[in-house]
Amino acid sequence: MTPTANTSWIQVESLDVAYGNAPVLHQVSASFPERQVTAILGPSGCGKSTLLRVINRTLELTPEARVTGGQVHVKGRNILHPSEDIRSLRKQVGIVQQRPLAFPMSIQENVDFGRRHHHGRLQRKERDRITASLLERVGLWDEVKHRLDSSATRLSIGQLQRLCIARTLANDPDVILMDEPCSALDPESTATIETLIQELKATVTILIVTHNIAQARRISDQILFLLDGTVAEAGTNAEVMGAARNPRVRRFLSGEEG
Ligand SMILES: Nc1ncnc2c1ncn2[C@@H]1O[C@H](COP(=O)(O)OP(=O)(O)O)[C@@H](O)[C@H]1O
Ligand SMILES: [Mg+2]
Image (cartoon, rainbow, N blue to C red; front, side, top):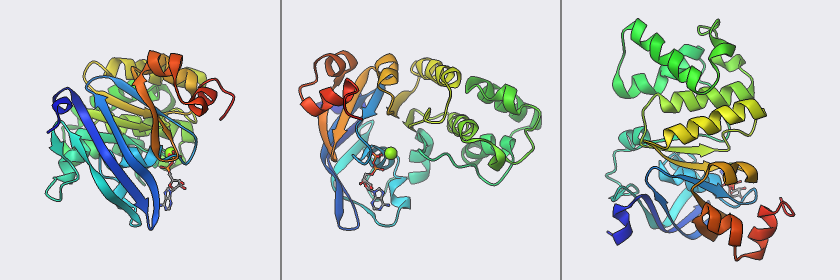
């Protein structure tokens, strides 16, 4: 175990990932400190989603994806090891996917899905109380409180994004991986989610992929910047925002390059 494994919840070492024969992550090393927010930035296609999906092993749901080298430790445990209990890993490390997907069931059942899967059924009253509180926290309650039993597939993308965050929170994870969770949200809903992230930080380690530089500046403690599947820059928010060494990273952060 490396010395930093004790202080970082998540330690990625020399990670290589390919889709089929096409490599997409090359020798990516990064550490994500406990109870901090790390923003993962970089142009489209640089491998941000791929990196997140390695960390709770949802990448292997994509048959052509292969981890071809490296290691990932979560609290000192090698989670890529074949003996890893994937079900408990995914409870401990929750993900809000880039494309929010409703399960074909009611809004209520969607929120409760993961929690029920991991912890079993609750009394109806208790379940309703938890659902309401989760939907309040993600700023969705007022929009859906009169139709909790209707199908979640009819929600707008912005509503789905918040539903998926609530569904992940319901599992009570130690780590939340958020992949562009505000991409379809208006400024008011975005502010609600940013406040939620700041609250969660007291107990949860958060990795968030965002294309919104101002958001990264506001909410992150650490920044990891990827270019073409490699780490171009990593450090504290102030270090990367204020003094990135890589010229392309500087152009991207200043808005000259998107
Ligand atoms: N299932 C897949 N098969 C082949 N290539 C893929 C697949 N998923 C992603 N890629 C490619 O891998 C690269 C990284 O993708 P991704 O991790 O989604 O990037 P980002 O999230 O930074 O936009 C891109 O070039 C993308 O086209
Ligand atoms: Mg992505």
